[in-house]
Image (tube, rainbow, N blue to C red; front, side, top):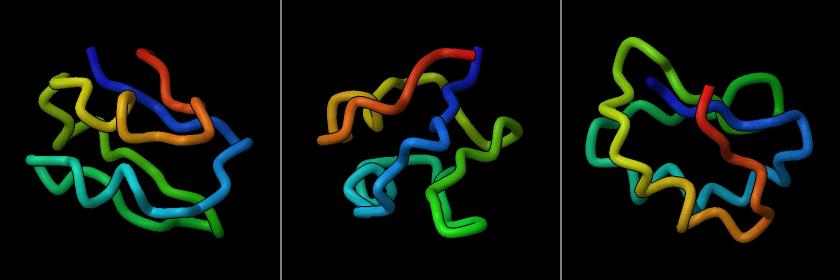
Length: 56
């Protein structure tokens, strides 16, 4: 099961550097997780200061 970032993302980029799979990038002014690349490790969840990342 992959993770997703809500529209409340503040685009700080903290999650992107923590993703070991390189699944997070900027898209439309917020960060986005590519579900095809996400390995369901949850590293991004704990890195997010805005608490906007959740399981799909």
